Length: 318
Ligand code: AKB
Image (cartoon, rainbow, N blue to C red; front, side, top):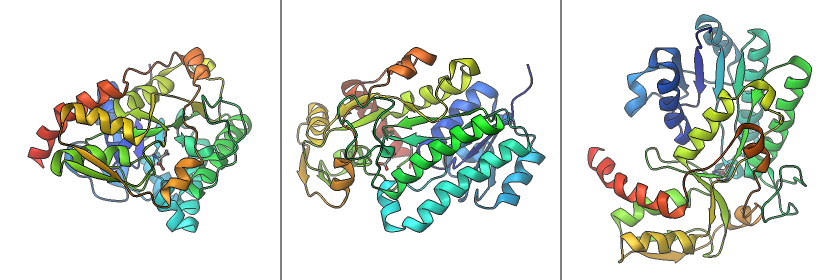
């Protein structure tokens, strides 16, 4: 089998840093080149790392050529809440970054490309419960519009240039090792940090706002399972629905209270409430289960226990 040389773009982010470590385990640290616009921090700095701005096509093409890259994981993006504050830049980064990567795949015959879509590609008239794979998509945020357009670009490069591009529509991702930035679902990460430090948390969403969510270990597993599946099993070249769990702020607060009885949550909804209200509450991921065997491992109870058992130790080392 040909040796794989992996490029991760946006490796310093919430998903990127954990996915890079998953790729180290699979392909060996020496075969993974992690990149970001900012310097490497923490564990990332122990592997191959270079600064890369995906918008600089020359930089990207040179790096791919010099390192004989065979697979790209392109994760650099502006998320939903931050995107609304700087819509033109969000569009520029999210779209032109993706097109630069797809062009590099054509130019250098990259074997496989991974690009994440999101539940944000759905909109207010999408069926909200068990949202199907193929349905109405009318995203209202610039982030969501860029994800929907990105899905179409991926499918187009697959059909017209044969690029083996694969994608997942992630729910809100919850991890504790790296803090997320700029998402609407990020309250479900911050709540753990505040529960430990202050024993209280002010939530920017209403108590009964259900959203699809996924624990980081499941997100890494889903991504690697999708990328490792034989090409003929990948029937969807836009992006696959994947589900982990679905909960609202009141439910995650109640789960945390089981471990930290004095924990209290208060609610002060802001502009992110409208974003959350435009998204599905739960996802039907039967295509992913049938086509390449997707199955999540974590529910709310297991995830909460795992985070509250491990986060205090990690906070001591920072
Ligand atoms: C966000 O909240 O913007 C992201 C997402 C759902 O894609 N976490």
